[in-house]
Length: 92
Image 1: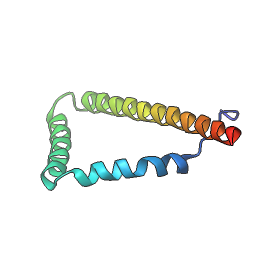
Image 2: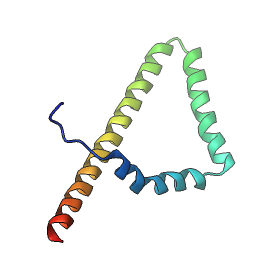
Image 3: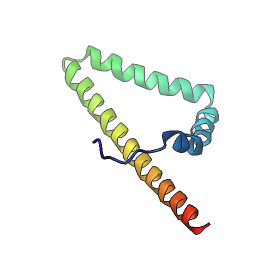
Image 4: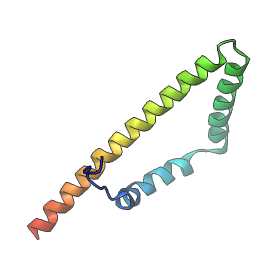
């Protein structure tokens, strides 16, 4: 991992911050509450279930996969930005 390319996370964050913030701002109070209630109900039902740990472990695994997919997409986007930046620097 030491020779892995170093990515400019601040540059990526600056380019994507407005879309993330816009999505959060676009949610109504009832939508935000629905997301919270859905997560709460899922955990509450899993806790009451005999297979509590299995369900939570499955959910954790799904979350890890989602995070990994987000990271892969972010790295791909950063690579694209880096190559575009390099191309524009060499062109000008």
